[in-house]
Amino acid sequence: MELPIDYATLRVIWWGLLGVLLIGFALTDGFDMGVGALLPFVAKTDEERRMVINTVGATWEGNQVWFIVGGASIFAAWPFVYAVAFSGFYLAMFLVLAAMILRPVGFKYRSKRQDPRWRSFWDWALFTGGFVPVLVFGVAVGNVLQGAPFRFDSDLRMSYLGSLLGLFSPFALLCGLLSVSMLVLHGAAWLTVKGEAGPVTERARWFGEIAGLASIVLFAAGGFFVAFGSMGFRLEGLTDAAGPSNPLRTVVVAAPGAWLDNYVRNGWMIAAPVLGFLGAAVALVGLRFDKAPLSFAGSSASTLGIVATVGLSMFPFILPSAVDPRSSLTVWNASSSHLTLFIMLIVTAIFLPLILIYTAWVYKVLWGKTTMAALSTNPDLY
Image (cartoon, rainbow, N blue to C red; front, side, top):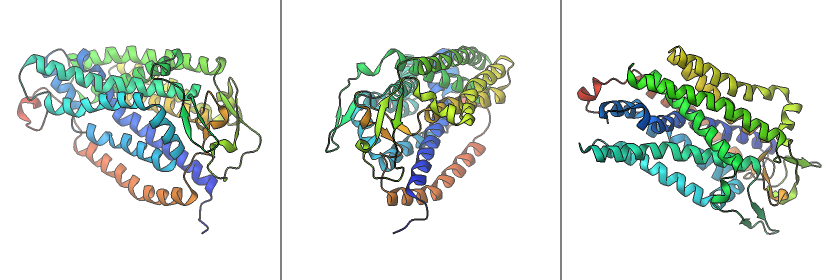
């Protein structure tokens, strides 16, 4: 059966959709986690902490849909990537999921008892549920850029040769700290938009300024490592973009500095890192001069730019192998079948707009400041 969209184009479309889902997750659940990571530091009293929690209380569950859909999309569209990431990075994934399990329990149980020790415990659980996943996701991106320690044999059986501690290399930790600072900035900006003006938002602005400066410095440092370090991979020879999905059919070599190749070939891609820096600078200006919408727009732009920079730098690679470059997974050798991608695209074209419309409607209905006074009058608040 001949499909209306060729295989190579579908692969690129699904690479772009995966990027959209990851960016959507970073933009929405990212500020939730940023707020969680800030909770013990920007709020000192029980009322202040309840106010902070309720700035994300109405939307955090819906925002996690992006994480679930992203994982499902990797499973369906990029099965080789799913097999390597969820098998080889199993312990890291378990750490993320264990931390994220604390979030719903923390939201639901935190205010069930008046005991200060009880509430403090769940406040730190919410911090853990925000900080740990963000750190590990950044570390994971650092390992993707460096290449993961896996290989396929001639029967396409995968062997993972790394360990949990091996994931935390200096560059990977730098990426993890960049992820934390990026989303703490995003969370601080959200608190200035959603929180009632007062001590909490003042502290959030202060922490946000530190996180914004850290984002700029760490993003620049990461770019320096990518440009002058030992990481990078390159395809050699002719590649059949519509060929069968078999990681061993492509020729890949380790090539330090190769992650900059795409910017040489396609000058427009420089817009992504520029947006990463410029957005953080705009967020800093908004925080400094108490312009909440400007700070949130800036942090959103910075998050979009930083995440997009990784994807554009690596294209067409999705997950390179550091120990056996020929096992590297790319857009051209790691996807599902032509028919599977096409059917999934139809489903996505129907349901993704519905999700976006519903999400926009929810935010419109629930828009407005979270105030201290509402904590005693609104029974629906945490």
